[in-house]
Length: 364
Ligand SMILES: *Cc1c(COP(=O)(O)O)cnc(C)c1O
Image (tube, rainbow, N blue to C red; front, side):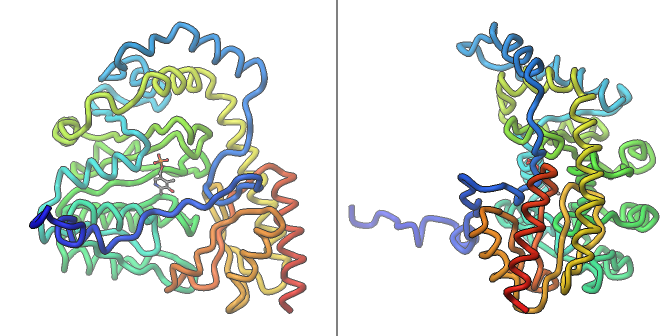
């Protein structure tokens, strides 16, 4: 045994310095923390899905190229045949694949700050330097001068821009993003995880920028449990990235179920429209609460700033009332005093608002 390396010496220092991605225990709670679609499928649809799965041969490996699902996705997104399409086990896996494709020690992955935490985590996993460009602290809007200066100074090989942004919910101005894409020396991935709730996309702009890739996911649309993300872009990029993809990363049940769900996409789209209506009502109700500053959102969640020092207490009070939201206060910086709530079912949103109102009264 002597001489055998211990975790302190064997595990990469950059990995030991990280803490694991924490997922809160949500059992028995009204779950408004993770941007899931709250709606169930109608009974007949669920039955038809089960019938669709009846003939699955689980003894066989999945189709490694996911042909049927890919042609369904191409039709659904109206993708020209000239674009490549790569599938991931959630878009989280795609972030990892793209990072692995360009990672070298000393190279920079750049994102806005605050934004999706996986960009920073995966930069660390893949041994890249992370540069976060602060959003304006008053309203989380884009500081274009700062972004262009950071691109010029750090020459990032990879830029991720969540559009709309998580956890802030806003969209950045289209022309500012275009300037950033044009200035970037490396790849720019527009992460359109919330496209179903926003009236904006760069998908039809792919042909104009050689360094642009578009990432989507079915998670926020209503299929978070399936884990399916997708990347669209020029084949000369995607063919290289695809070499890193493990052969059977999209399992058979996901391929069949996603194909089935997209054949019935009108139902998911109608659910997204309901969520957008509820979002408008929730925003108005939050604006009427004393001491609460909600930020306008183009996604299926709302970021809110609460009275100074009250975030942890309000989060605990909501949890005690059976409602789980995301407490962003521990992240610090411009997210100090902030909570993020996912738009749920109408009755869940009412329960959240009532519990928040009651908790605020106790804090006055
Ligand atoms: C939720 C989220 C993702 C992750 O999506 P999965 O496909 O479930 O891995 C990616 N990007 C952003 C901005 C998100 O908010």
